[in-house]
Image (cartoon, rainbow, N blue to C red; front, side, top):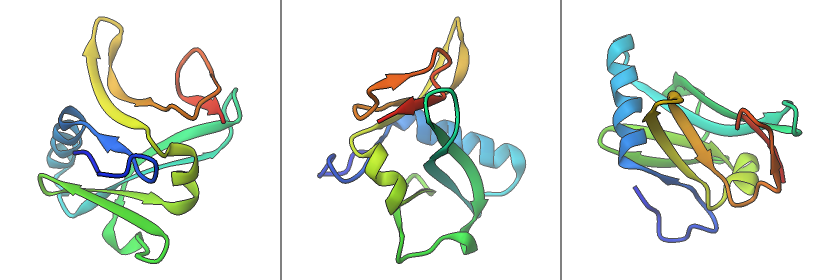
Length: 118
């Protein structure tokens, strides 16, 4: 899923969408959304947030919603400042599997890839 203006949103790969949907099906709750964001913390200053939450917790005034294949990804405007242009992907390789963030705004990131500074 790509959105036209990558300067104001993120790109979510088909592999990330498929694996988010798989996890939601595994939990038996397809009525949730995937919250994507950042919060203070981690060894580099900011940590990525990726969690499932109820649709009722979203706020159309502050959240941007990206939908693909019946999966809604929600990003708050504050996080979008740090994530604009980011690619959310899912990798399944020898080093393990999981969601990854390829963030062009990250000036520095920690070794585990879970935190960054902008």
